[in-house]
Image (cartoon, rainbow, N blue to C red; front, side, top):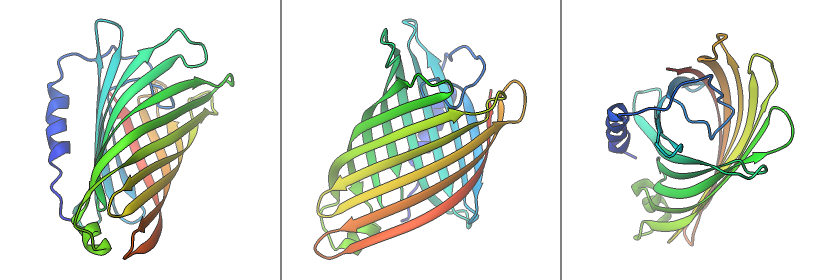
Length: 247
């Protein structure tokens, strides 16, 4: 799929033009509803490269938002996929769900491009160090040219849903944590497409201020494409080594 990543380029320009950022404090990457200004670079076991940058904003009403742009390329330097996400965090008076984040997630890859508005909840597990964040959203998108050719369809538009469950556990006094989170996207049109990403993450800080982190991330992707002309399943596992820093 030959796609020019215009959305990530535009979003990066917006990010650096943001006038106000939230006050910095000790980073907690295991808390998805804690906004921050950060970036990371990573390389996979198959030679792929990925980079991401995030910027947070503080509003006068006490609410916070964060814009994140992520893009990847293969071992030959060709663009493969990108992700743009904005989420807005609201604090609640509820002890079980202390925070709610409304988000918009934009994906572009070899199979489809989509936008998914959704809601993420911060669940108070009652267990020290255990953070749980379920997310649900609706999904609207278009199948790629490669997929429409493969599935022999003429209408590339599709609708569906997205869901995820993020579970993080901080195990060490230094902030070392582990994460396990499945992310599911489903699109239905002239073909049915489902993509399940199951991620396992291990991360540890490189300094006492917790502004430099090393991460190992294992991602298994199971993709299913079905219609009258095709019934195909694809399974792939990739290991990423990431360096993340806050500023």
